[in-house]
Image (cartoon, rainbow, N blue to C red; front, top):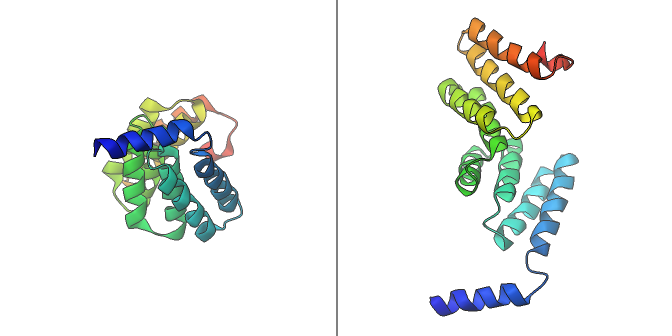
Length: 164
């Protein structure tokens, strides 16, 4: 086993192009997503993951693709694995919060939105996390609590029509 790890490490150190194909496949998958070519995007991101199975952004991207294709089992596996690989990936918590809310799992959606708010690296993620939490609370028939979250959205960006 140690010899396999050593050989793999040597190949990685000696091969300057290692991982570049994975990134190329990832970038191509993003273009396919933009064009709504989700099946092709899935094939490309699968190749990227096969070449670099430790990339949280690759699993996150595949989770997005799977949600677009309605592949819910794979979506949950991928978003969970994204968080496993990168515990502070606020966007993954936000993505899962929206899907959980749509699935009627409001408490879990709020829990994930809370994590996204806490970990948000920028105002945009924080804004959408408050929106997601507010939407889950609204769906639970808690309009006052939802209103408070929507007010937090307005504090972040009062010009965005989505906040109204």
